[in-house]
Length: 114
Image (cartoon, rainbow, N blue to C red; front, side, top):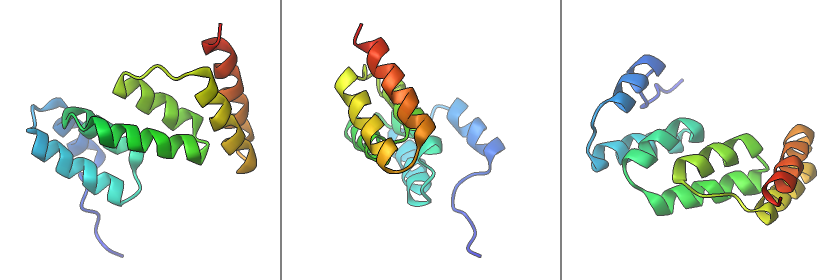
């Protein structure tokens, strides 16, 4: 089994609290993304001011039907999710059998549309 190139949870917490350069933060973000650990990469993407990458990861969450990840990255990126985005996410979640995420996305679509 290959050793992970990402910090352990305690070291990650210390890194997030530090004042990393954008290049350092982006290197950590890329390492987490390479391992498919998207939620752990978000803080580093924000620190790196990688707005385009954040939008791309946000789109991945939408297409994956991941309501939790979509909400977290939307908040981190400072993007207000639109009702139609939640409806699209709900459809993706439903087709992938993610019933709870689909229901949550439908509720969020109704709430954000009011």
